Amino acid sequence: MGWAMSDKKYFRGADWFGKDLHKAELEQADLREANLQEADLSHANLRFADLRGADLSGCNLYRADLTGARLQRASLREADLFHGILDRADLTEACLIKANLNGATARKACFDQADFYEASLYNVDLSQASVQGADLFHADLFHAKLHKTDFTGSDFTDSYLSNAVLDQTIFDKADLSGATMPDGTLCAHGSIGQCIPKDPNQPGFPPISMPPLG
Image (cartoon, rainbow, N blue to C red; front, side, top):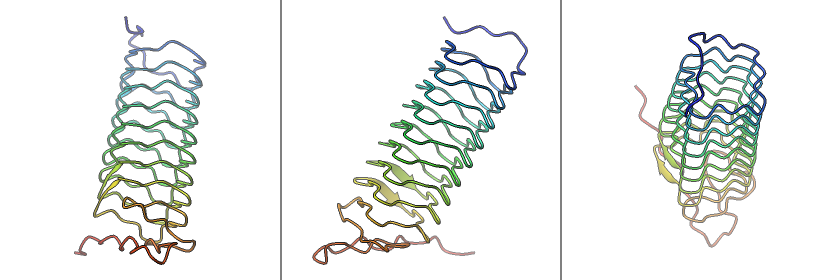
């Protein structure tokens, strides 16, 4: 049974710490600055919900639908977004430290200036997403789908991109120092915008082709 809610959808500042919201119907709900720490929102419908500034630290968002949701400056620290749907969602400046986004889809989403420190993004789909100026230090993007993803100015220090699918991916001014590229190449310190192999015997990962202007 899903969590039943009234027709009211204004929950700004609500304190739902640890609440069981499994399968909750919260489409277009106003949850700005709400406390959802450690809440169970698995399979919840949060399409186009407003979660700006909300605290979802440690929240269970397994297979939750956050299509088009507004999550600017929200905290998803250590949240479980396994197989979640974040297509077209806005997570500008969101905290995703140590979050689990394995298998999530985030096509055309915005993660500009987001913090992915030590986040797990195994097999995530970030196709056509904007991830500019983000912190991906020590993040795991194994087998991630990065078709036309824009990582301009992002920090990939010591990140793991093994087997990731790069197709017109943009790394302009991105710091790839210590990153492991899809072909196994380890990037040397100072790899800005492209991978300079740490081992001179490695061929190096070529610069990512930029889309034509105009």
